[in-house]
Structure formats: C-alpha cells, structure tokens
Length: 568
Ligand code: TEU
Image (tube, rainbow, N blue to C red; front, top):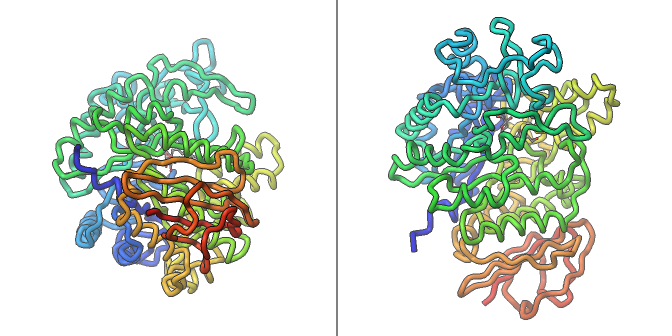
C-alpha cells in the first residue's frame, strides 16, 4: 500500500495574523509577532501553520480581498519578514500553508482595474464576469441586475459600472469581484503565482471557496427562498460544471510540480459527501482534504444569524455520515472553529463559569480530535477562548455583520434582535485578539487593538494555562500528542454509538490491534450511559476531569465529562 501521507496524523493550527501578535504597536498583529510566538505552537505540538491572508489588500474583508498576490501587506510586514517566519517554522520542524483566495480578487487588484477601465473588449475584460443589465430595465436601478443572485454579504451579487453600463459579479463584497475561471489566461496566471509561492518554500495551500470557481455560464436566476430577498444562485456555482477540471488542472500545473509532499485543503461551502469523495480521492489527484460546512449549519435557520439550539443527535448524524462517507476514499478535515465561526465553547459548550468553560472546551476537543481526519486548531481554541461581549454595533468590524445589520435595519427589524444574532454567530467572535496574558490588551499589543480584547483575558490566557497542568491548553497538548503516538487514531475505523442519545456522544476507533472508546457528556448535567460489552476495567487513556475513577456499567458521566478508554 502507498505510504500514509504525513498529513494523516498531523494537526494544523490556524493563525489569523491580524489578531495573533502585534510586534510594532500599531494594534494589528503582524508576521514578526508570529515569529516571536512560535514556541507557543511548539509547546502545543502542532505540525502545520495555516496563515490567513497576509497579501496586500484594502482589507474590505480583512485580507480575503487581495490586491497583489506576490507581496506582503505593509500592515503585516515585508517579504523578508515572511521569509524569516518561514525559515523559523521550518527550523522547528513545522510546515507553513498559505491561505489562497482566487475565486475573486480585490477590486483594487490591477487585473480588475484593467478589466473595468479597459471597458468592453478591453485587455482583461474577460478576466472577470461582466454582463449587460436585464433587458428592458433601467440600468443601475434595483432589479436591472443581470440575474437575481444575492451576495453572501447582503445585497445583490452584481455592481453596476457607470462607465461601461455593465455589471460585474461578486459573490461576496462589491470589492471582491469574481475571477472568470473559464478564461485560460486567468487559470495560467493563478498557476504561475502559486508556483512562485511553492518555489519560495511554502508547504501548501488552503484554497478559499475553491468549489465556487466554476459557474454555470448561463448564470440563471436562482430560487427566492421564503426568507430571502434575492435569488439563491448556489445551484449554479457550488461545485459548478467544470470545478473538477479546474482543480485537477491546479494539481497538474502546480502541486504535482513539487516533489515534496504538500498539504492542500479546499474550503467548500455547500459541498456534499459525494462531491468531497471526488475532490479528495487520491486516485483523482485533486486535493488532499476539504472543509465542509454541514456540522456548523445545524444550529440556525435560513439565515446564519437566526441562531437555534443544537440537537446532539443531528450533530452525531452529520459527523457520522462524513466519517462513513470518506472512510474508504478521501479524507476529512476536522474543525469546530476558524475565523468565520463563533467560538465553539460558547456555541456547543458553556462559557458561563470557569469550570464549565474549561470542562466543555476540553470535552469538545476530545470528541473532535478522536475522529478520523486531520484536526484543525484555531488560534485561542487551545485556551478555551469564548465569544466576546459586543456592547453595540460599534464594537463589530466584520463586513458580513455590518452589511447584515444595515440591511436588517433598513427592513425595520428591531435592533436588539439583530444584535442578538450578531453576538451569537458573528465572525468577530473569532477575531478578538489572542489572549497571551492578563496584562492590558492581553499581551497582544502595546498599542490600541484594532478590535477590543475580550475582558475575560484576565483569567483566560496562555500564560496562566501553561502553568496549570489541568488547563485547556495542556489537554489540547495531550490530544495532539495522542495523534502522533496512537496509530489507531490515524487509520482506525470509526463507529458511532448511541445515535439516538441526546446527551452523550460515544464512538469507537479500531484497527487490527487496538480499540478506543470515547464517551462524552454534551450537557451540563450528569448523564448515565450503558457501556458496550467488555469496556469495564479497560485502561483510561485520557480524561478531562481530575479524578475520573473506573468505568462502571451503567456509568454516570459528570457534566461535560469526556474520557477515552483503550483495549487491549
Ligand atoms: O469563507 C467563505 C464562506 O463560506 C464564508 O463566507 C461563510 O459562508 C460565512 O462566513 C459563514 O457565515 C471564505 C473565508 O473563510 C471568509 O473569511 C471570506 O469572507 C470569504 O471566503 C470570502 O473570501
């Protein structure tokens, strides 16, 4: 059999540079700050750093709107700073993966200004998606857009360009025009740029919304759902007609040209298990793994801001389906958190008091890290960092939240109701500064942070947790160590237990020699569970409570208790 790829028992740590560590006191994190803090990651034991974008950008979407793919934004430092960080990461035996956003560029990228200013028939007009107004409609007026698609960031997915009388497509903000991937010139330019980064020594890419790059060329109207104000274009652009052709071409023109093994992960809103199998089946030479979104869409209504309680059986059914679906071909990425999701301890756990926070955070981590796939740790997750308090709309920074607020206010929705949705699900929850210590601004900056630090940093911080062997940090360190030392964690079969139990998440991992049992209480109350046969008196491998005691049958799990047993 082919050797097990290195990333099958690796753990990836995602850094959001803007909020990780500020070395020059301007209130924004930067590359030197990351280099200064690498030993935190070495202590944690992670193998790979995934860096959210640090390229030049107007920061309309905090760097996911790139205006130059082959440089570093002065806000974060210079290419020399980047090379120093890369060397320091490699010197510690870790690897660095870049976040690449090529479904769209910034509207300030020269490719787009050429395309716009050159007008129809201009030099790069066909590098983006331009269309005439809907026939018979007054150009530039609501409803005259070429189709009825809405943007992920509220409003229509089209913006009118007065000079040419045409519209350009942007699935995200109007400052993020979508590239036309049907144009081979665009694809060649992207391939050359990616090879440039690989020649610089980076170890792979996280590809932003890479399953959206191929659109149905007819760009048909989408269905207007009952809660929607615009058409849902997703059937025309989620895993569109030529997406596998383009991703396989990326593999051929970029990844395959670098003999050292890379890590490639595609972020794929709306991807199904069937599609994910096609993207990650090694025989197809496309990507190593994908980020799917099913498990982080179980606790809200049509809008992500319409928060609803999670049903544990829905979560188990969803994650169980993905474990089964990719068991024989392909590979799962495992995550609760990233820069787009609220903090998991506040979402699926309990952040209301220090014990419940630490206990529920380590329970959630244990469940995730014992699944089959590559685990991702998002900065601060290893400390059990929680959602931040946002006093008013002025505390929010994220374009997705600010646009949603403006749109809902214009519709006359009650302000407190909108703020409640933003506080529960807003992406800024993940973007408050990393909490290094209990000093002012949590040791993140000596200046004024670009977004307020969570007041709970006085007791939730890396310095305090490093000194406490029972901390969330040390539990993550033990989980990551297990990933490196227990082969059954990498390739062992996954079997979900108790699918109908609304309180306990239980499953096993097994290979020819070893079997693990994971029991986790997803509630703040004691939970009684009947053990599967033969697990009493088995060795306790890891628990998130100080005095776990032996397994009995039936067994009473304490609030938020997680434990891993091993046999033989
Ligand atoms: O996210 C794509 C994406 O699907 C998210 O917009 C997600 O749907 C939404 O945030 C959930 O509320 C990627 C990046 O991770 C995100 O930060 C960017 O804003 C977006 O693409 C555009 O580049």
